[in-house]
Image (cartoon, rainbow, N blue to C red; front, side, top):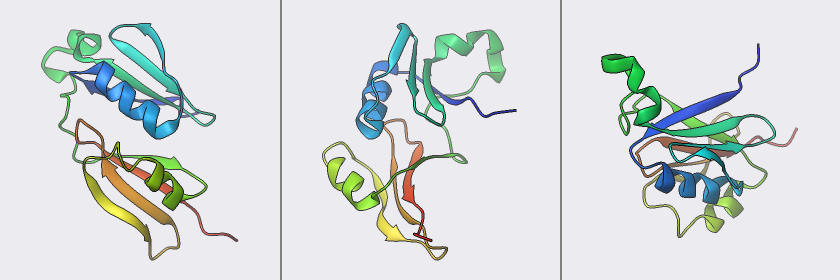
Length: 124
């Protein structure tokens, strides 16, 4: 079994797609107005409208209500990425910091409030 993607349900697919395009540098594919995919070499970030989960009724995911998942991207240089994204980030939770286990990380929130972590591993 392989992890294929993570899907974020949102009220504003266009806004969230633009944000993740800026973060990843990947242009999203848009097979429908209610759905976008940003395909990286290791997995896909899918962004979908609430319309795509309407058939789940009361069990459907609620946009902008995540309090337990962090979307993580492995990068070569956290500080350079943080500088590149300076004008895009409105809510920085943690500026570039070396973690106790050696990773370099920065955490920020996307427009829907989901935490995003850009990190690099220490050199071996």
